[in-house]
Image 1 (cartoon, rainbow, N blue to C red):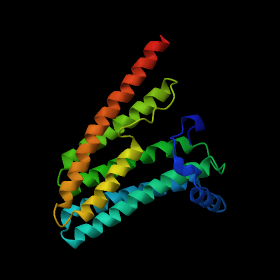
Image 2: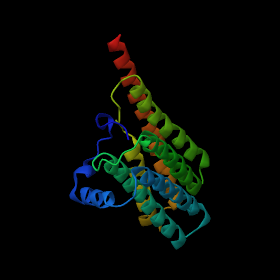
Image 3: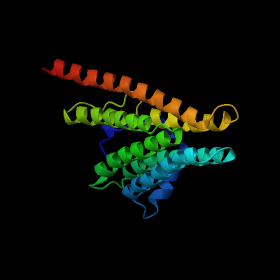
Image 4: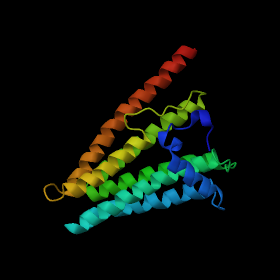
Length: 214
């Protein structure tokens, strides 16, 4: 895992339930890297179920949206507990940095492309995916320059997943009046515009830090 000082700030780490689950996981042979790998599986399944919105109708769409949203949340829980197991429980290993970063990018691709397919807007899903990866790249690029990791939004990873989960919930609630695919497409536009703003913000911060250091 990455160093604590460059760790994404999450208030959920300090909750009793999260610490309790971490202690329970620490008593098992499960490694942080295995939890990270499982998060990829959850993301792939979330993307598949989101894509299924385009192949179903009526109550079928409600069902697939519910399952997709649950898999997004499962993926986020894995993303929480791999880090806590590595750092709080002291179970980290030499390849932790790889497993901390790469699964997140796979998850971005799987989920956002799946949402695009479900919305009937595959190009929009790919656009959101490309911008999400660019957002993550700028954080990593700043870190490679010796700068503190920039997790700012308005569309950082946790914000993207919150938008997707909210879209799944709204797609279910509004399904009698608005096609779920329309709700998913709207969510993708929010993510695209938010990612553009985030890219601009993080890029400007990197530029300003370099200018000041010179």
